[in-house]
Amino acid sequence: MQKHPALPGREDIVLPGQRFRLPDGSLPIMAGGMPAAPIAYPLGAPSISGTSITVDVALQNPTRITRDIARLAEQKFFANRVFSDAGGISGGAILFELPPSTATDLFAERGVQEVAPGQEFPIMTFLRGVPSLAKPRKLGGKFFVTKEQRARNDVRLLTRAMVQAANTIALTLDSMAVAVLNAAITANSRTSAGQSWNTAAGTTMTTRSGTNTPIADVLAARKFIEVELRGQNLDSILIHPNQELSLAQFAAAAGTSIDGILATAGITNWFASPRITAGTAILYEAGQVGGWANEFPLAQDAWYENETERNWYQWSVSPAMFVDNPYALLQLTGIA
Image (cartoon, rainbow, N blue to C red; front, top):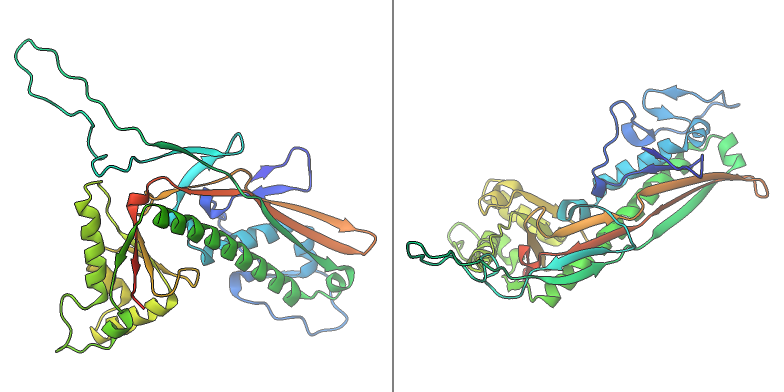
């Protein structure tokens, strides 16, 4: 955690893209599920019971709220699974290099040659990529808790605000990630036609073959990448919940699970999200597609507004996501 030098009430929390993890023992409001609202009146003094905390204590410790939101957001989004940590941002942008478009950039442009005794060795030359820029986008929001809500210890209102804030952060970051991935897929024609996974889920032992199943599509995509000779290994997949259902049905009929089915095709990581276009899936190699950096980490400002007698809590973050290796991903289409 980093104290902001100019704002004593401000503290920075690192998002999952920067590998932030909560320390042991700092479980906040939502750790044990939604706490019940107090029913006794008048209300007693602020107190902590297990992992439950009253609104009054939470408002006086805004770092708890920021940590809660960071932890909740981490559980709900997939952007940090696709993009690797690219460090910080200086100068307002990230400079990266796209690989050359030729199909042989895995090897040197000028390779080794036979050398006669006493002859000078040849100089190896290598293809250079295309320099590109990724600019961060500043995202933020705020909410308030009134003096009356604080006095009445409205735990449910604060809990709901925190959960919705975390969901919104997750939605925004995932939407950014999908937009970046789709742009790279379109620009580099990274698609492969599949077949209906819904139809495959309805096949029987007598009608099922090695070519009419979801795994056949995944295996074909992996083989497509291998033939490109770029050294990539598709080991992860993003799917829409509709395709997750078809996979689950297919796996149940085969007496296994989604994990087991995908493992047979070399897929070790998968995630289902409605942000993925229905009827498609994105295969990628974990940690090889691109990077994610924050110009500023998830930062919090908290203040009390005397005019309206409200506590305000404001967050902002400036992420930048980029694909510097489009050949480490491939989109399956037509699998509805």
